[in-house]
Length: 108
Image 1 (cartoon, rainbow, N blue to C red):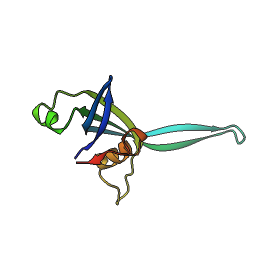
Image 2: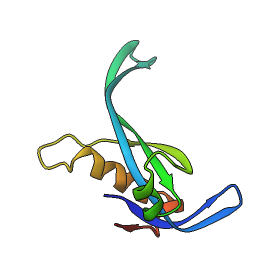
Image 3: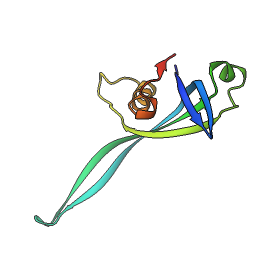
């Protein structure tokens, strides 16, 4: 699973850049919110995920040497964890493709 599209890197254009998610880290984050009007503290739970992806010149470059990346990119998203939620890697790709820079990329 990966996405492919036009990628700019340090003045270099890679028209068929290949981006592959290589990790998704998930944490349940708790934060306190102070309600000064009621003099109370409310605890809120958030489901945070961070993904890392490798960017390659193209799929052939990735297949030839998976350690020869142009750069690594990261992003965050709110992970769904209910019974019908997609797996974390699929959710990471969806979050990546939701960004303007990658909205025209295709699944490969």
